[in-house]
Length: 462
Image 1 (cartoon, rainbow, N blue to C red):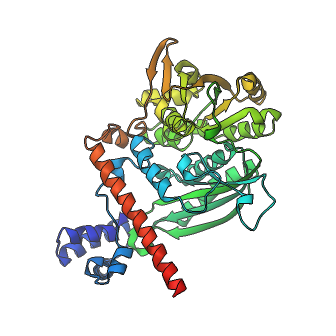
Image 2 (cartoon, one colour):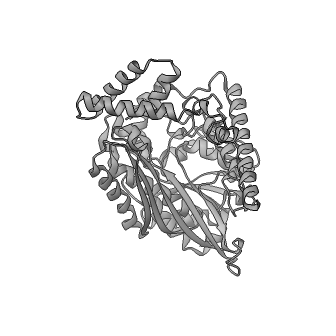
Image 3 (spheres, rainbow, N blue to C red):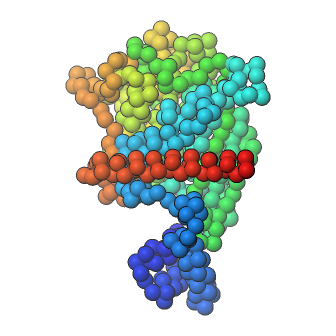
């Protein structure tokens, strides 16, 4: 995929001549499209013209310049590890969560760093008398490396989205789709993606209710990339299985995990395609369906999925919200990982504790732990107790039955593809400097928000 607008702006910053820019753009067009040089040159000139005319450095009106401008952090998302589900990503998402806060407070907000968010209908002014109904919502992004494999891309992103509703104790009632394809993507790619999405919708009994299909960047991006996300809505009554409910002394259970989008990506890009088959199941959703119907649901404090930051990342985030610590037995966790998946990860030298396993974590009172394991076993779902909640405020892992170590998330999740391994998981030397710049950019964005709110309110009252 080629972002022609981004490329042009970059070349303008580098003070390239118009002819140099046009030559580069023409080559990009010829590489991606079956068109002649004359048409490519015409299109390239249009892009260059638009980029010059939209350059806000020439805007004289301060309000417009501020409105359209960006308070840059001068730190790229790649450098910071945004989306890589490690410590760098967690840092940015805490700032994003703070920016999401408004005077209207949800029942479960993004600041909780939980799997999904929620509102109580009684909190909506026009829906009084519905104290026991909680609406849970989730937005799940497509795994970026599965663009060329749209069926499994759609399958795994939809399954992941529903997972995050179930773990909050909600029954999913609606699936919505937002998919963007670059200009040269074959239309069949869209249908294959939709087939993957609707496979999960059919198996789970949750209808697809709405969606949006757009091109990435309109005419400014060429190539065949597919990006986007799936959102879903669920309903629960009375109780929300939130991380803040976790108590010291709770037992931690985990179900078997065979992975989803991340393991599929690892398998495909390492040439171990047969392992993809291990991920094609809905055992996680089945496990949740079983538990949500049980009388002992009241004694389940919280549930979550072992997602892209892996167990080490999830436990760190959960502790942060629950204000507790955990002790985990590594050998018990290892036994719950699908053998073919574990063999794959060991073969390509990926730490299985740092990647998504599509396993269900259950925090519950001690008196129902064994019953949960038994009930899931009757449906051929393997589950075991892997540890307990303590007051240490740390993630402690016991290895080989006796060696105890503190487990911290890496700056990025485990590097599960060759390119990720080349980039590495290490914390950048300038981490603190980067964080200061990012915090400043977030602060400036908050000030900008308030400035625009004041502007609009003043105009309404004028």
